[in-house]
Amino acid sequence: MNIIEKILKSHSVDNLKSVSPGDIVTVSVDRAIIVDMAALHPEFVNNPPIKPFDPDKIAIIFDHFVPPPNIEIANRVNKLRKLAKIWGLKDFYDVGRGGISHVFSGESGWILPGSIIANTDSHTVATGAFNAIGRGLGTPEMMGIIATGKTWFIAGETVNVRFINGLKKGASAKDVFFKMAEIIGDIPNMNIEFSGTGIKTLNMDERSSISTMCAELSAEFAVFPFDDILKEYLEGIGIKNYNPVYPDNDAEYYKTYEIDLDNVEPMVALPDKIINNVRPVTELGKVEINLAVVGSCANGRLSDLRDVSEVLKNKKINKNVRLIVTPASMKVYEEAIRLGYIDNIIKAGGMVTNPTCGACLGGHMGVSSDGDVVISSTTRNFKGRMGSPKSRIYLGSARTVALSAVNGYITGDENE
Amino acid sequence: MNNITGRVWKFEDNINTDLMYPQICYTLPENDKPFYAMHANRPGWARMVNKGDIIAAGKNFGTGSSRPAADNLKNLGIACVLAESINGLFMRNSVNSGLISLEVPGITGMADEGDTLRINFNGNYIENISNGKIVKFRPLPEFLMEIIDAGGIINILKNKGLLGEPL
View 1 (tube, rainbow over the protein chains, first blue to last red):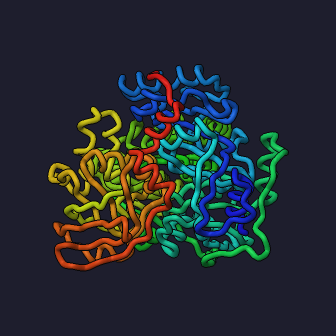
View 2 (tube, rainbow over the protein chains, first blue to last red; view 1 turned 135 degrees about the vertical axis):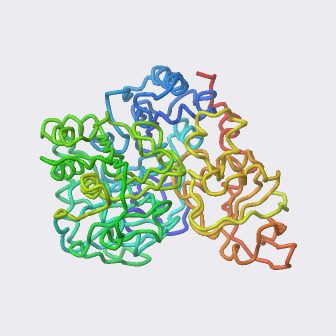
View 3 (spheres, each protein chain N blue to C red; view 1 turned 60 degrees about the horizontal axis):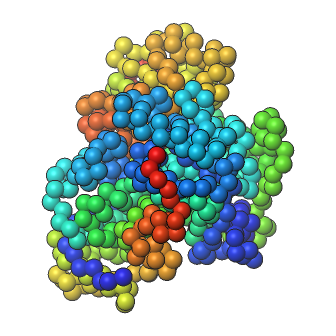
């Protein structure tokens, strides 16, 4: 069995002896995470589960609309505050206390190697960086999980993505993902497992960025192997007890792709979709922009803010561009202040917001207007995703966004 | 599940959740939400849908968010989604809201917009009544069909007494 099959097997409530593609597996869930958006689902606030399966395994995190942008949402999320009390949750993170759920749950030591995480947000595939599996689920399904502690998966085929060598300066994890989108395309109902010597050149932020973005390939899970980098990260936050999962020697993979990280160059996704729609920045031509956004579960992490800070230090952003930078968690925000990143961004003319999903979903903190041309390090470029359907959204790495903000057009070149 | 007969609306590859349920829907009155489905890519479409219509789409249908995109199609009157391939999260949400969605390789080649399709759940095939073409499909697992037959997971949870009073 591969890593994913082994995690499914270890959580099977029917004690399955093995798991292979096509098997339906009912599993127990190690942690369930509900984000503020659940308050906007009428069935959830009108008929919440009476009794949670285990209040210590459930968290409510406010992240999408932090702080609430209007009266309607402000009133609705109040109901979740009430619910956290009724259920007796110790893990409730309100405005100013946590961050984007996928980033905060990693920082909090909730994503243990070998575990299964359920979360109402679709980017829960992010958990793969921690040698775990997690899935974004609709709110109605989460109501069942809260009540029972269980859910189901149909085991899918798994592709093996092998990384060799390391990234050149100027290329980033987001560009690795774009390369994956180019060569793999969409893979609904299938999984990804990463392997190869290139993995050791990627830090946890970079692995998380890649895993997170695999939602955009419609992958079910996108899992990294356990290694010293993950071990040291977990040690650093005081986590020692867990069961890492390794693939068996005879683990089966549907297909293997090899990516030489040394050949990865800055890339962008053109507006409206990612599949069949990525290009190297050098092949793009001159695309002038007026809104530049850095943030999200994929690329609002400390490594991303470091890249932005490096680019912006002692520079000014182009007069035609509005730059909005949204740290992914309170911890990222605090560290970025301590390291001087925030200072560099503000001095260059960028605006730094509080941690939130914010502009990524077009909710607040940078909604795009008719005619805006946007370069963003966020997760999705769907038409209308970040605001007006008449805006055009290009996706790139945080470094590409910063370079583009300085130049006024999309570029990944440090020397322009 | 009874057979479904309905008129076809064709959609391309990679139709995402944000097209089906744009961000603004979150705070609209329930009855208004469905009319914003596909507003960005096909303005005016939602108003033309009749109850019982069928969507026939390309691959990777429903890629994207956990938002209640399937509910929006169901509440608009869509009786069934057929696509070359379907995103796993959309499929789960569709089942859990009681909307049947099926992966049907070959569907885009056998139906044009406006054709009438009959989905036969006993024989697991789809017949295009307008041109006579037939395509087989692999049925959903029985436990998922049970959720759809119950009208969605909320009904099941309610019947088991697991859901409580409004907050």
